[in-house]
Each structure stands twice: as structure tokens, then as C-alpha cells.
Image 1: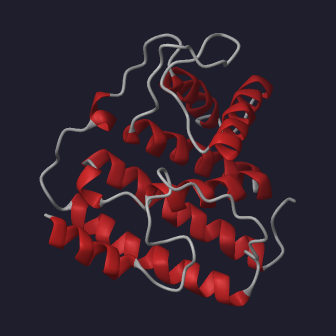
Image 2 (image 1 turned 135 degrees about the vertical axis):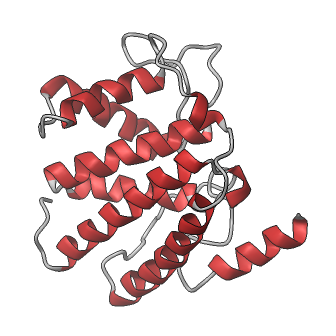
Length: 204
């Protein structure tokens, strides 16, 4: 298993500066990062294409159980709030309340590089709450991606890139079928947004 993980890491490592280490354990804050340079975009695309290929392979394997397959919608969970945003997106609109919730969680992730499973009605973490599971993070990524595409927002796109860097830094053995499907969707949306950014066609 260790050799397989090393091989996987070597395959995904590239000149992309945010690969090769677990970014949940070793947070990256992107100080002075030049994400608009041609080299960055080229290496980002290479890294994401390799990840996309791996994810598609995982989707062809037998579906396995993980925390993402056990996502609960109990009141006061991170998933509950993400469900609210997702329901709004079904009507191709991001409501005022939903946007407020989204921005709160984006800020929490941007500042602390982590989210938790349970929050109170004021979106403050409950003291007894564990950190969010991998499935909750992939769901958050999908919601951010969908909002970024709907709003064509640079702010949401920036968060999505950082979040995807973190998620793709985790060994694939932790991915479930649902995780892989969500991440495939995220990479495709992320690519669309980066194309828009390169064309100057994104809201700053």
C-alpha cells in the first residue's frame, strides 16, 4: 500500500506548486502566488488532467462506502446548509440568504483551511463538532463550483482552486465513488472558469 501511495504521488507531482503534499495537514496560504501567469495555468491544467484521469479510473471501480455515502441532513449540519444552497441553485439563482451562508463558509475555509460538521443557527461551530469528513468537503467543493459558474465569480473561483488543491492532495484510497464523481464535476467546472479568466470574461 505504501509503495502504491508513493507511486501515485510521483505520478501526480509536477511543476504545479501545490501538489506533492497533503494540504489539509500542511496548509498552503498562497502568499504572493501568481495564479495568472502562463506557467501556472499550464502546470495547473497538467495537474488537473492527471487527476481527472485517475478519478475516472476510480469511478470504474466498485462503489465503496465512505463518509460521503453517509452524508446526513440532520438539522444544524454543514450538509444542511449546503443543501439549502444546492436547492436554490436548482432554480438557477443564488438567493440572498444562500449567498450569505456560502460566503460565511468560504471565509471560514479561506482563513482556517478547515470546516466542521456541525454549526449553530449563527453559523458558529458547535464546540463538540468534529472536523468535516472528506465527503462533506467534496460536497462543499461541488456547491462552490456550481455557484462560481452561476455567478461567474472570481472570488468563488479562487476558493474553488484552493479547495480542489487540498482535496486532490489526499491519497485516492480515501475517495468513494460519490467523492470521485463530485470531484470530476468540479474539475470540469474549474476548467471552464479558468478559461473565462484567461479571456478576461469573469466577474472580479
